[in-house]
Image 1 (spheres, rainbow over the protein chains, first blue to last red):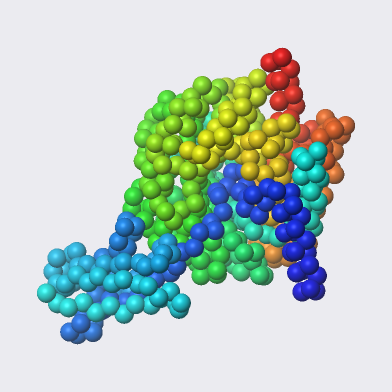
Image 2: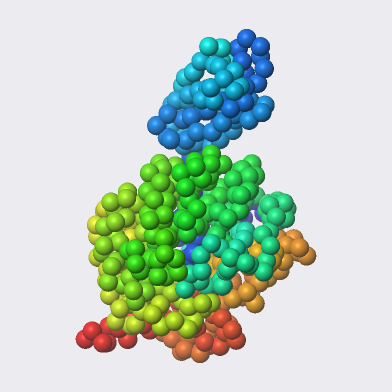
Length: 126
Length: 356
């Protein structure tokens, strides 16, 4: 069964390729969107206070140059998708004054994407 | 000679795709509520829809029946206006958890900077926004006094994202027909990379409004406009896959006409119906997620989509282009289905005669 499927896939690629049309396997329905073949990745993590180890709510996590950001939740957690690049620069910033404590900004550059990304970020108190 | 060989090969390819019917594109009609009341709406959506939104849980349960999703499998959120739902991001994250991708069709009114960022954060990878003319003609078709500026802002946001595979769609009608070159310039200026042009099929609210439809000569001019625009690299302009366009086939799209409804494209509609594109006559629904297993239905039913010989009737019965057209886009078959609603090729043939 597997062999038959693989043969069919080859036939599909050969016939498709021979008809010289670039968009055979990339299509969109009349009233739909283009397909998404871009690569992105999921970045998850938790922000804690360096001194106490307690989670910090309301820390702004942003991707430099992408205009993407979000806030950590009650458990200090964050999770978002962003475009895959050779390196991704993140900033962790306390933007809510003293509401959830006062913490210094931290910058991080990600370059290893070989494993799922979960970041443990510790912020120093100001 | 070369083009005949290409066409023959394409027919074989289409046959093979039909046999395999890999589901790679799934519409989810997640709401029929809408914040606009467009003159051309094919689904008769309204602000007070009689249907309640389908719960994410119901949809995900159906999605979970899909075994081995095709590479790049995409769920396309459509409506109504999907952004009226506040849980779109949560739904999107659930879709991504299943190793699937998702995208959305929107009228752009609620597409603010904040929403743009939260949708990207939730893993949205593609987006389509409608722009139906310059200010006056867009607002006329969209039946709103202030839609244009918001949509142009939304287009700017989406076009500025490196992540999104984004395009703008325009329904060409009598009011915006003379503005196409200006719309193209506006989109280039906004950084848009892809623009798809449609004509309006006389269904839903559009059935009785002649101003929405192009005459044959205008349709040929539209084909010429697209063919000409495609020579430039500034923006990728194409005609939608709404119908077979004969002589213009290789010139107005990246590929030959191929209506993939029910072959690679499925849908889960607001009431749970299992079908193909949402604008296809709902009598062609093949099951319902509340009573049937979604993927089993996809695998074992859908015969009217995969064997289209039933469309060889009316003017299609004796048509010499049937082998390539196969009854045109399936959304052109409504009511008793005794006659194709629009024959794009016939419009072209008639339009070219007038020109001569």
